[in-house]
Length: 438
Image 1 (cartoon, rainbow, N blue to C red):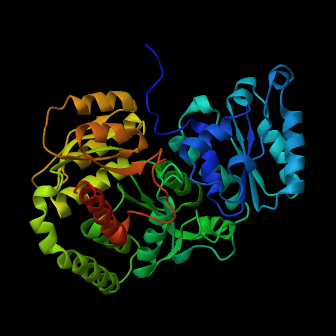
Image 2 (image 1 turned 30 degrees about the vertical axis):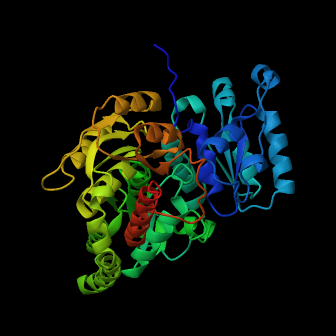
């Protein structure tokens, strides 16, 4: 049986380079073969950032490094990188070649760290996993080799939380989602280390990670390994919210859970929630007549071709707040078996009356064929990626691109998390529906 898949929607483990690019003034350094960074950036990148894309230093390992080892070449690239790139942190990531050869990258990096240079490393050989898993590997490496040794003074700070919520760039809307999560958590009284993107203070937040009162994992499974690692190493407890909160119901549930876990005054949390709900539902009420009159023009069911966090979050939102029924839901993040039962439970209880069939599948071609053969003739909404444009066109379905690749959409700070994200989702869905009318 072939190991290849059609329409890939995530990258190999080396895709964690994008997680480094998402940290302010941080630079990935690849000890890998030529072309790896470019291929990853073309699939999951949306712009080069501070030092991404063609800016990323790379050893471009060749036959010489395979035969004689690549540690000397890595030192040459690092020497050059420190001379010409102004950065706060360098993160060396290994590719398939160096991991197969067995270069002692840790020893090389340790030598530079002894000289007081800000550098860490992580083993991310592409064959080892995908970029969902390696994102956690890289985050833990930065925590162990940089954050804890350079821990900010002051000890544990009440009200300070670290948020581990998404995989930057793999989630095309990561910047908008993190901004909204920070906004609403700050709104109920927390100080938030969001760690990635323009809403973060950069490496100063990472040095505060060990001082947090607790950690918040927002998502089905990515981030749990980081939270458990911090619990074991520095004793920080964590709260797990198992999907992306989209819209009024889920956002309120998320904030109440976070507030209760952190011991915030209930009245303080409820005051912010009430104001956010008032604004959210005012917009819904303003358009209620239109939505009711146009209900026959809306899709009656939806398919998700998304990672678990998005699939659960959007399924709950579309069903419980927009009344669109779930068809088969495809989870495409190669979910580890240990987490699949919990995800199936979420789909089994989307509401008090509705459940949805969930299929764990990474092959986009197989998913497309199954949806085409579904036999349901009513109008559908497909939550997927740029790969699904032809599928949606052939089925006369509406397509909302939520997953990589996103080559048919420009994304700056758009996000779908929280109250504001729920409103944006309605706008985007109706935009696509109304665009089909002449």
